[in-house]
Length: 451
Image (cartoon, rainbow, N blue to C red; front, side, top):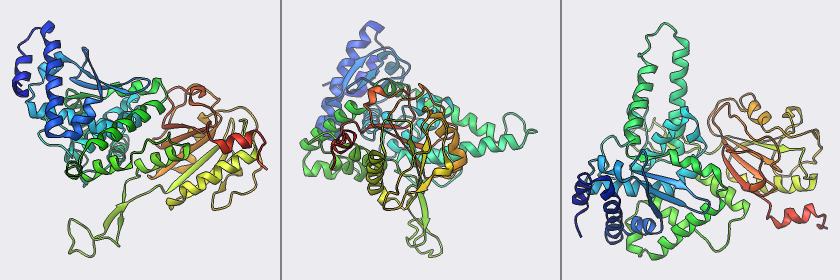
């Protein structure tokens, strides 16, 4: 088999008509190499459908209704000048994006110009910290630290880096608004220019714009496919091979179970577990960087500090159904030492009727009853939650409302629909959408069959 570096060098000398077959040969050789020398990545890639197409980047993941597809651009790949090891690093890079659900989790954020660059930095840093032999301009946690000027811990979840970058972006914006006498290319503008330039250079390596295609179809089938890929991969790896994987990758394989489709409670638990709210100081932990300094705090994972549950009172659910679902949420959210508050809404949020959710669900009294306007929830968020980190919004609704909503501030959102996701009125909804339509207890309550 011709070496991968030689194949890449030859690719740059071929005509456009010859580059397609040569790229297909390179792809096959690369998967075979990884199957022999790095079987985790090889197994995942061997189950991933690939397609050759002209595009802006050498590699890109694009969503299909039931899976993700890897799109390779022969022309762009020929222009990279990558060595064989750098090419393999970028294939591993793509696999880790898929393993940690970055395309699905950040599909909505990719549609916002001001957030897309931050998403690239956050997700690439989360992935590249585990890789070596990366191409030049690859973004890591050290790149984020250099940009923001703040200490950045290696190998964190992308949500941690995204939160840090969003905070940095907010401080730059505040600084520019506070000083209207500053020259255009100074201070915050200069750092913003660095962000844009570095993002452009990194974008030449793999594309994130294809992640937006996940918004066109429901994610449930793709998630089932992803779990099947990881379960099949885990079953073929020996204990020794799994032992060589970084802990976070091995932990991902250990969590995968595909015996039956996940219930909505299971999907919610997975979503809550995969989006940590960052880290916070803890004097009960040693500072790992300076363990002899007892006056310096360590760090622990910070969970959500505030959880706001919004209940659509215009829907078809009765008080029994709402009480049942709130009871389920109470049980699932007990792992979070957070303040959980419930707000009813219809065309507006009824703040005066809100209540703290602690243990037993109180007797419910409807205060709404008009139409449904989801935008009322997002408009009220800054007033209700402020801008502190560690906040989660859960919207419990039948799914029938307007077709589009705007988010005035970044916040983690989970939609719980009592109807199938195909009937959800909002197109490109921010956050994660989970259907409760198949819950047998909820069906029984709706049918009045519970005694």
